[in-house]
Amino acid sequence: MANTPPFLSLNDRVDYLYGKHYFPNNSFSDLDKYRLEKMNFHYFVGYARNFRMLHDQKMINCPKGPSQVFEIIEMDTQISTLLYKGLRQAELLLRHYAVKHYCSKYSQPNRFLESSNFLNLGSAYSNGNFAVGLANDILRYGEKYVVDMIQDNCRNLQRQIPKNCDMISINTVQEILDGLPLWSVVDGFSLGHLTEFIIRCDNDPDPSTHIWRRVAEEIDFKADRFQRGLDSLRSLRNLVSHHARLWMRPTTYSMPNKGIFRKEIAHADPRSMIIAFYNLASFQGSSVRRDFANELKTILNQNPTYEYGISHLGSKR
Image (cartoon, rainbow, N blue to C red; front, side, top):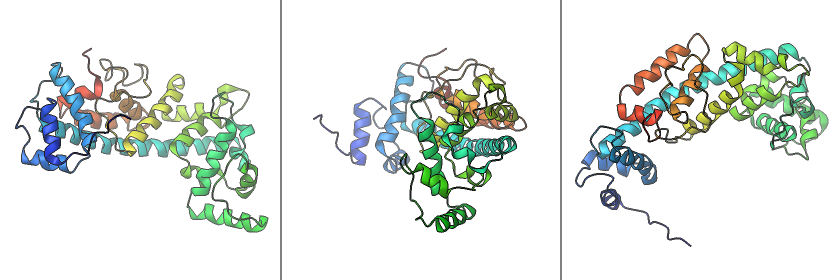
């Protein structure tokens, strides 16, 4: 078994960073030490390691001190606050347009829970598994209208309220969820399930009429990039929600250099996080996406070192 590095005291952390040439000796101020003591060391090192690499390779021009790293961490906090606002707006729009176009096309209340009505994507995550996922989202959703209807249905069917759903119990659970319209439960879907629902929910033989196309049109998002855009949105949401480092992190889903923000990302690494940021801007709706993009620029322009690490991954382009 490999030797596990020990937990380090504050002074040991500072000595470690000096010894590994992250920073020059005696560069930690009292404020820097206070900040370091209040932060998980491994989290800090994730930033410091990338900062050291960029600085040593002369890709950034700033003092090589811990204060500069803490400034980058603070920039990540600022940008995450803006991204959270944008993610909330994007989710609200997606939920609204999914309900609008689904309920306009299909009137049967329970149709959206039946796997036979889903588009077959041929993925490992089957339509049956997806139906189970939606059912579990609804069972966990605590909105009063939904809870009351589930209780009434269980009383009428003389069944216990299920705690969860699986492939064995899905038919029984669907009976219990009978009569719940999409508009009453869609806000309980996780973002992952919501984006999957938008893509899968319509198996109309005519693909040109699929609901996901109508949702993309409403947001003014090109159809050929829409599914990839949803994947990027979901990935970014998970990073922001779990307070992950964004600076010098490659995005999971790269996007083509197209669309209204192509000039803003023209010189960025196609795997860099700024691609995901402007993808989110594109999901804000045509009336406000430019405003959101301008807010992004305002934050990024505050710190050239931060901006470089958001738009590059260690090599100049």
